[in-house]
Length: 220
Ligand code: URA
Image (cartoon, rainbow, N blue to C red):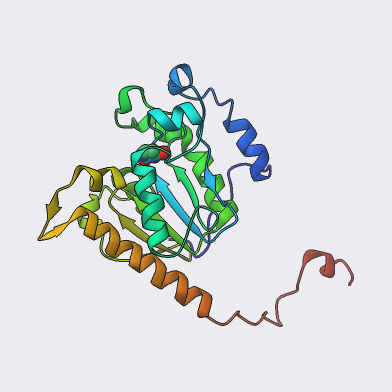
């Protein structure tokens, strides 16, 4: 896995990529969506949550995680002292699948460049993948969330923390003696720990062998 995030598939800045996404015709979901759901929160923060796909409320409002799962996500954020100004929230696919069915592979593939552009823009310190689809997208493995969660992964210089989708926690249930809700809370505690460690880490000194910018190179 590369040490840094792969470059954006778009040459344009992120606001232009967003404008393009908002009229995207690239898959069948363009026929049934009300709104393209681009992102919420702060795309210049260090923390990125990736969900699966917009649901009914998100499609109507054009904002990710505004339904019941979103309210739980806000509560979990508040419990670690954060809110949507301190994190970005996006989905693997930006348009609602009819009837909230699972995203299909060709829809994920068509939407992939938008999430890649968001990742390349943010270069987040921490990526939290919510559920199977986001986890498989980022880990590039057909792994289930129950097996993937509970540990950290280093990818592109970011710490990836896979956890349950908040909708799964709302449905209840448990595995291996722990409830899905408690597992989510444990994973959120890990998010806080990693962010706190990153904030406490010394800022690396610039490498004197590296020129500061291309402009400077032009001086000689
Ligand atoms: N579930 C998701 O995965 N994303 C949303 O935006 C809402 C619900």
